Image (cartoon, rainbow, N blue to C red; front, side, top):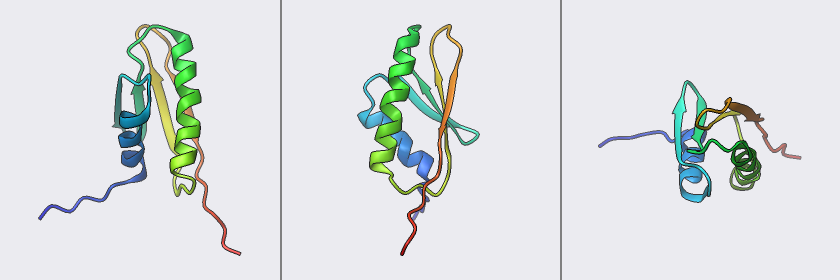
Length: 91
């Protein structure tokens, strides 16, 4: 019996592969979530960032770790951004 622990970055990758419209490929490398647009269009990279942030915040409102993303596109400079951790405080 194989037991695997699904980490938050792996859950996010599964979500992006399923829900993200302009992601061509999604992988993880050294705790960075790498998203390939498959396009040389800088505007698509911006749209992808605008799609990822609300999606992650909606599906994972409580995050115990900081998520780092790198958006890549053919011939374009990579765009790196992060979504900070957020833990709900019990009153």
